[in-house]
Image (cartoon, rainbow, N blue to C red; front, side):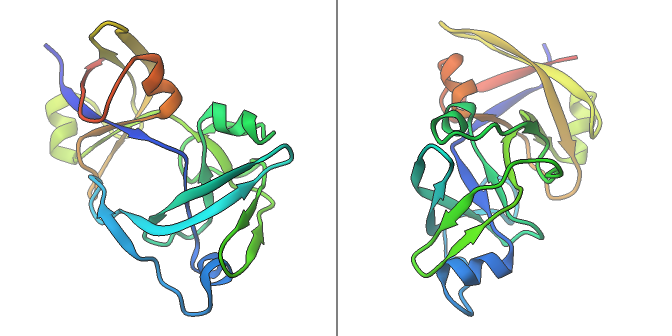
Length: 190
């Protein structure tokens, strides 16, 4: 039996740099945590924005905190298509060559020249959890889910280091394909 971890399904969301937070929500504004996320120090925020693409708008998209060095919009493929954006599948933070979007907040607007991605599916593991699983940071593994719509996801990036906690991140399209809900266990297959 391989190492098992819980899935955390990731709905469309965005991470904002401090300058964009102030433009969208007002000078001196700081993000308001509403719920801690499983990854240490990260949280869902009260703040939401509208994301505008060439063909449509995604209304009320949640911001995740804390502030990041660069603004990043994470969409499922269905979301990207709905607003007319061809977002590449990328590891978080790898934003070179990605398309931009317009963000509309309650106070102002930000036009991004890049930053829209479909997040590469990944599993977070602490260093001790990675040793237990027999993997290391940047490994690519498969993860198997049982059930009525059982599925094996290939090309899952291992993200291990301090500040990580065991959790498989899939977007809503991937979760729906396998009939998953938050907390369902998946097994690493090497």
